Amino acid sequence: MQSAGNEPIRLAVITTSRSDFGSLEPVWRGARADCRFAAHLLICGQHLAAQTLPAEELGGAPAMRLPAAPEAIDGIAQRALVEALRARRIEVVFVGGDRYELLSVAECCTFAGAAIAHCSGGERTFGAFDDQLRDAVTKMAHLHFVAHREAAERVISMQEEPWRVTVSGDPGLDPIAHAPRLSPEELEPLLGVRPAKNDVVVALHPVTRSAEETEVLVRALVRFCQDFAGRIFLSTPNGDPGSEAIQQAWQSLAEQSPHCRLFPSLGAKVFRGLVAACGALVGNSSAGVWESPSLGTPSLDCGTRQSGRIRSTTVWSCGVDQAGALAAKVQHLLSPEVQAACRQTVNPYGDGNAVPRILDAIAKSARDTRLRIKL
Image 1 (cartoon, rainbow, N blue to C red):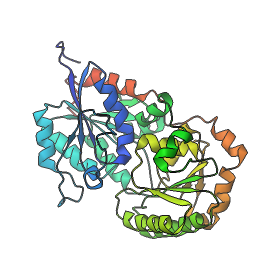
Image 2 (image 1 turned 180 degrees about the horizontal axis):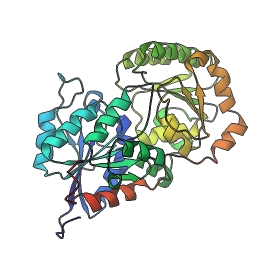
Image 3 (image 1 turned 45 degrees about the vertical axis):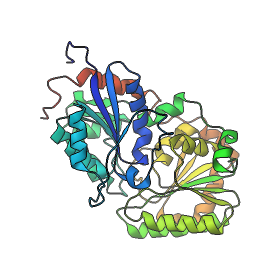
Image 4 (image 1 turned 120 degrees about the vertical axis):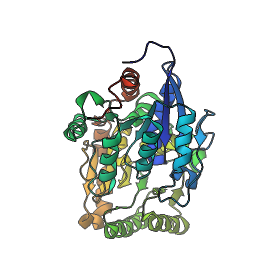
């Protein structure tokens, strides 16, 4: 149990890319406002190459940007990270998701003697190699914060002790539930246009287990974007192998089609406001599965990248063999009946109250003598 002393628990939140920051940021901000914690934000991985998380996005809050390691496949400067954790005497590190950088991060935490608290374990995405990475981090982690009961059962089936597992919901949903959403009018000066319900957001990432599927989806989405009557907001892909081809295709679309707009770095708040303002999210991003239900926006999940995830009634599927039918499927999502139904959905990934559950569980266990002894 926590020691009798009043010294705050030294907690570090480590973010490696925009894909994990959406879920990590609410925990970091919550810990900063909680007297039980001394919270630190460490920025590394893809953030460094992409120059993401500028000072204004952090709201002036202190954060450490670690040096880049260009010779490393994951960009993690391991020695610098270990030294940063030791210098701050970090007790617990909070990480999220399934990025390949997390393997190096987890190794550094182990060397630095910090316990690992991991969120989003127990998920399944059969179309990507993320499952292997996620499960490897699960076995290195000491506390597990999962989105739903099915994920908890999977983590426990991996011989993790039940007391280490908390069904918290995904913390990335907390701001959607409690923070005001940017309106179309507020988005207009940021985007140059005012998004509307006849517009669509497209977010495609590489299918890391099938380069051929990525190529098929890129071609199909390019055709769809060229023919679609409304505006298309193209989201930059992540940095997984194969992302260059997607980026090049999106760049060409933005240059050749006046109704296609490419936004390299929107930030979580703007991206969520945009998805909420538009009529549909199309592609294979995890945001279409776990985020869009809380935004009341239907999504069309294309291909196999997110196969295996549980889904709400706002998520429709489009197999690779159905890629030619994208236009008809999107038009169905834009119908008044579907739009109305999606505003009434329940998100299986959480109720927007994950952060207090996570912080309470960390505060209870951080100085428990059992924590670092994995059976």
